Amino acid sequence: MSAMDLLPCPFCGRHVHFWEDDLGPNFVSRFVVKVRCFGCRTEQTTSGDDQDETYAAAIAAWNRRTPEPGKDGNNAD
Image (cartoon, rainbow, N blue to C red; front, side):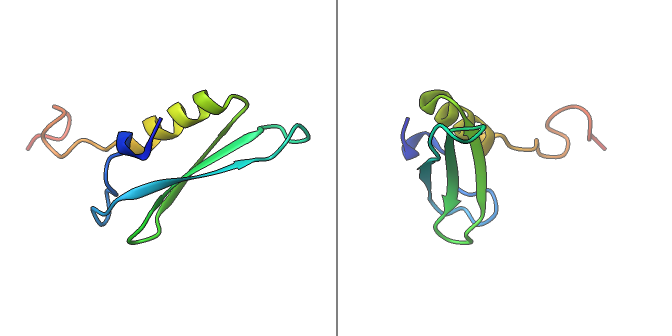
């Protein structure tokens, strides 16, 4: 998993990067992965027990976007 898998920031369009922390075995979720924007400092946090699964979940969460009005069939005028 790499930052190249991430879409640009949905708010300012700038590049984003990962920030990771291994909390150790004494925490409910061991790994914390943040995706942070270089521009507007927006961030999204994902945590889990497996490092690869946590990165995959962080990428999926960050890349999820709300459909544009009229593009999903539910917001058409």
